[in-house]
Length: 273
Image (tube, rainbow, N blue to C red):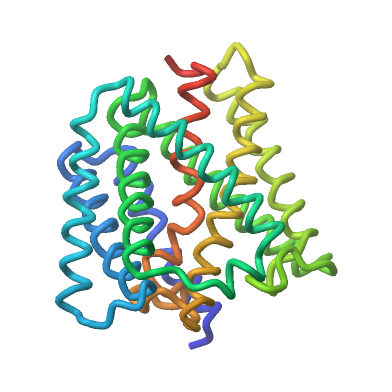
């Protein structure tokens, strides 16, 4: 079976399950699935941080999940500040990925620093999805919309890149991505945001559409960030748990950046409060 066929088969199985979990599952079930995703992602991140021992990778994954749960105990002002800080972090990361890709690849990062970054990223994606699903008005719909944005951005970039791709977006980190694909993904998300604005019946549609396109833009650099981590340790995929897709980190790489930025933007604009 070809890699593309495996990807399509995995997607056919996963997408209905994801839609049901996001939209209709109980709160404990949703938290359980989210915990499992973060646990596996933590194990994979430890491997990307050059941790060889299965025991130590497991310990990192478990402590990363405990840290994630600890974030749910923070009060609202502190948690909001955490999201705003993540927005600043990703804006800085985007600048560095664009202007200093070669330096990011060449410079060594101490393992403890890599693991600390992992704790923060895992904690952020956990608390972002947790907050969206459980603590926002129209939470399941907002989370589903975020996932749709990622899928549409990815699909739009894929087809536009295959059809028109000529100029590399980041040849050192991800040679397969093109500027044309990036534009195609953004335009696809713009179209989705226009229809989503009608669904949510938002008063400030222009702001909603702007936030949507910005989050889609940021998601591309979440993908590039994970590609950078893989290139630093010379691996193709973060794992092999999903046939044709690689590891869990390979599937949530866009969300790692997009989810906390999405929440930060919603909090700042007060579109759903």
